[in-house]
Image (cartoon, helix red, strand yellow):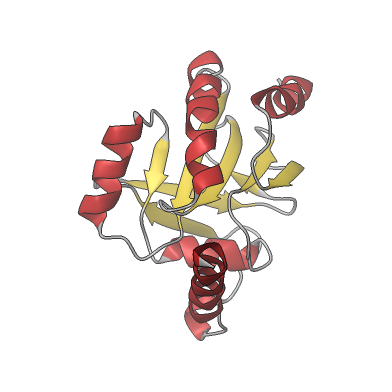
Length: 169
C-alpha cells in the first residue's frame, strides 16, 4: 500500500513540475542551458543538432531524485565510471525533486558522489528538451561532439554503460 502511495505521489510531482509553461520550452539548436551546481558554480550545456556538449568530453546526463531507490543504487557505478574515464567523460546529474539545496548537499556527502550535481530550475527545462522525462533514473550519453549515443530508463548495470562509452572513446 505504501509503495503505491509513493508511486502516486511521484506521478503527481512529475505531472506538476513537467507541465507546460513558457519557461519549460525546449532548447533550440545552438542555445545553451546554464545549470547551477550544488557547489554554487555553473555548467553550461550547449545544444547541438544531435544532442548536448560540455567541455569537449563525452557527456553522461543523469536525471534523478534523492528519494529514488534505483537512483541511489546507481551512484557507486557512476562514481566508478567518472573515476575511470575522467579524461574522456563528464557525468552531470540533474536533481528533479523539491529537496532543499542543503538536503541535496547532505545527500551528496553521504553517498560520496564524485560527479557534478546540478540543482536548478533549468533541470526541468533540460528534461523538457529531452522529451518530458517521466521516469528516473534516466540517463543519456552524448559523444564529445554532442551527438546522441544512447539512453537508459531505470537502473542499468555499470558494464552496459561502460560498453556504450567504450564505443565512443
